[in-house]
Length: 240
Image: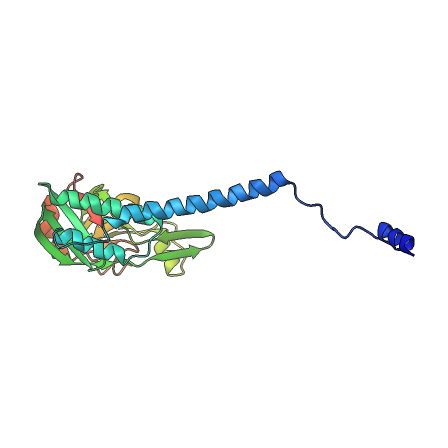
């Protein structure tokens, strides 16, 4: 009786459907998981290290620095965005100690200031072109509101603006074979920044663009006229 039971057990199929993973593979997977966890923790620590000094205001610190801390603490940023914000704001803080004209654009308060060191020479309200992605017949144009620290790349008055293809696409139209150039199409005063962003005065009534260019900044014509002599290719612009 006992012999028959043993024979049945010996003839039964092996219950394991898959071979057991080798020990070295288990160890490798464990090492990869630990490395991933350690790297994620390292990134969190780096962000914390970069922001601790900004996110803990004290009465002894300057008002400007405390304001920047409060604004940054309210932002939901990834590491790359945070690094860019910190860089532009720290450069801005350095400019407060200098003796040069520069432009400070506060997108949260919708204000632009011409400053000389800590002194505000002139300030004005601004409009910010909205973020926009335009798709038309296989082409895509993406505009993200500009932020960062830049140098002016040029400036123009009475600028003849050739209507770009994206503006026709935004209206659902095909561009003509020859796109027209509109006097003051971007405004009477245009300050050029990198990556085709601008600080502009309001476009003329003949312009198909009414309001700020997407992602760019529009300021009153009288204010741009007043600061115009102080804006050169060496002028720094801080947009935050």
